[in-house]
Image (cartoon, rainbow, N blue to C red; front, side):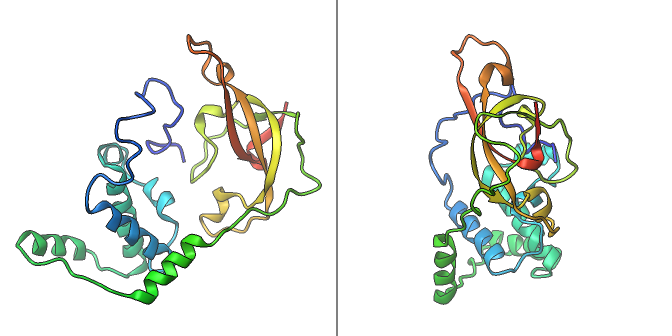
Length: 222
């Protein structure tokens, strides 16, 4: 889905690096939202699609006005509502009670904490590269011009741009389908190198290489 959430790499949108961008949390409530988001997903409390895909449904003006973890709060609440884990208006009612001086509820579950830690430590590598991959290192490819209606991991700024296959990373299912519970067979995932001037045109900045991991479905032969 092309929207306000997918503006990375596009021009005239300000600096990429902002002061404080290397700090994981800026407010005391943010790590709580991170934990809530993990529990919602790992414990199966929220309905699909996942958090990132749900955030893509935010109104663009609201998305741009929200901070990073405010967006996570929005998606976690929507997933819990869809699953029936919370009722409509329940969050707003709690906000009113907290504003009136009621203490924040606490919850201690050591077993759940151990499960969360175990899930975070679990590795999920891609399948090995398939022997019949359509492209090989050195092949020239072009990113398909497309405008997906739903979630995709193909950035807008490289669509229609030609690059060179550097290697085959492995094989994985296409996220454009799996995030919605649709069946998808593992397909090759390639590291594709693009020249910066091919992506953004000539610049006073010295040329550099942009390296992206892209699924086979996103690419076509040049």
